[in-house]
Length: 185
Length: 185
DNA sequence: CAGCTCGCTGACCGTTCGGTCAGCTACAGT
DNA sequence: ACTGTAGCTGACCGAACGGTCAGCGAGCTG
Image (cartoon, rainbow over all chains, first blue to last red; front, side, top):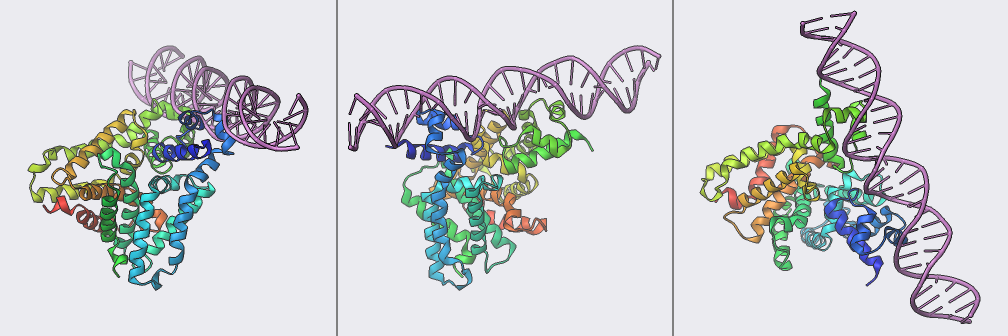
């Protein structure tokens, strides 16, 4: 296994659970069994490490949201399709999503975080494009923040991580219910 | 106005939005128009400031959860009562709740945070006491984390803070729906 | 063997962190 | 007028931060 990829994974886990600013390069180095200098050999800066950690998840998310940037034009089955893709992405990138959902607002001016924040805004517009009521917007916020929180706090609330398929089905059910206003229109 | 209370309010806002570790005493001092030394005159340490900022919210929460520590014994109307008290508490202490929900897991070994984490665990037990299914537990996690996220990110998602009464009604509706398994049983 | 790159390291840099301390000013009680 | 005390301050401390740099040994290539 490569130190480069190890560092990415370790940094992501620490950034997501302990917070970006609360995670030192020294700490990452210790977890990887390397020196701080080695971390900075593989990644030019702490910010570059953050970019590598959550960048791919944001790219993938933009891929998914991209085709639907005319939310009032898409059909019902496409909305369902989107919801499934979205839930799958939440499951695949749970640490990344949890990270930029919860720490995004506090890390402005970091390029990769700004991309994430802009993406969240686009998502909000997508989900509330045709439903301007306050409650519908609140539903979106709760669904997004709630899923991100729950998927990363499962271990603290004695929730099992397995079986993945059952979690997916339940999450799809709950998210569909929460976003019913857009998912079933 | 007292500097003491000013500092508490400023610190709470900064801790909740920027994060505890990311907020320096210097920053709090500047926002309050004081020197860092003055902050440490009013509060013995950064940790004491955190305790003052979120302690009252935790005390109040324990008051609310306390009477219901036999969840399988309470009646339906009591569950409804509890949900209303809980939503009111979320609205009154939104910054505090957002703070220890999102930063609680990463700030272990801080006494006041440990109290908060223990409280969250008690809440989880309360809501899922008679419903051990995976989906019901996920519902609780999404409701808690989602409400905390949404109530502190409203301004970022162009959600209005007013009118308070409409937000309360909508939140009660959504939370009741999410926690239907326990709220209506 | 010489030369080169790759992964990695310790020593070191300037800055900022939370926290301590002696001392300042304004004011109230005696 | 003397004495506290409350509120506040700048100077300073050791530790930890992100980051730089010269140089190490191993392995591949000519």
